[in-house]
Length: 279
Image (tube, rainbow, N blue to C red; front, side, top):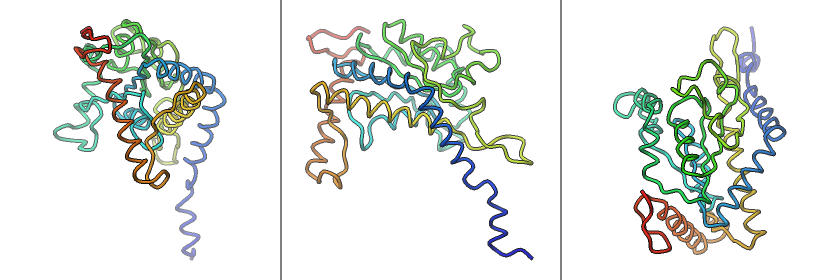
């Protein structure tokens, strides 16, 4: 008869498997995509230093990295997370606001233009779009629309998934075809990393961890650039680190700076020269 520890060991054959594969993914990301990440960080830093805004967009679970960028502890203004609730509100799963609706909407051609009509990008702005698959209409058309408006677009996506099958978009293109620069999430087709005997489909997606790594690499490199150029970012910081009063000051300053930058990008907003933003 097996002891309890032996039985537990048998049941945990895959313990640590996903973690090991995730660590390998991060190593590959650093080795193969590090140069592109640094280039995007430079573009983002130059944008923020020039009073620009680094916009970030994602549908589905790709809202996770845009929330990681700002606002949260250890982040600072200059980044504008753009998350449409109709395509990113997942917790109800079924019924009203369910996944079926969200997955349908992100495939509707023409919807991205309605989102873009709310924004008056400035020439120094850039847009980073997160989409693992890179084949749904809204991320593709956000890229098209932003480039048509004259700003750089960076795609953070799985190149393997972009190249899989026939693109369903009417243009026959994917997100990676419509970007000025692409950062590969390094995940396989379908995203999941671990195959288990007896289970036909793999489990344990890896794209979130590489997307979060990309975001924080960019964030850290941008902060370093700003400091070296005499600009001190207002970093959202816990009171446990800087004390209650300073933490509150930093939060208020960061929110005020974010509001200042983003408000001038809203369609119809009054810009700093006293003119009205173009619609």
